[in-house]
Amino acid sequence: MTLLSVRAAAIPTGLQFFEIEKATTLRESLVLIASFAVRPCTGALFVLIITWQMGIAALGVGGAIAMALGTAVITIAVGMGASVLRNSMLAGFANSPRAALLAAVVELTSGGFVAMLAVGLFLRAL
Image (cartoon, rainbow, N blue to C red; front, top):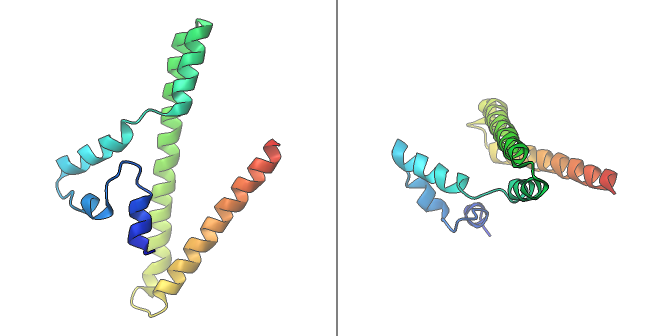
């Protein structure tokens, strides 16, 4: 399985990676982003239903908005951080034959760190 097929398989809307690359104009990119953003969050729906049943629907709406903003802030921060770190770490090795190896090591190390963090949080929750 190639990296391209892994990336395409990870996209939940059924779009293929080459279809995403076709978005060349700002309008096409915004429509693509909106198509991912429209899907409702299951957790937010749960909060809305529970608070509606409890008679505090306004708090549920506030909670859903807070969840959305928190998710957006974290997603943007992680994306920007990953982009900056990747570009700065690999800038000196761009023309080196070991650039691909270094990129793989950095990605595997950071992925392992995230996995260890997730396992630790899971075990702590038990």
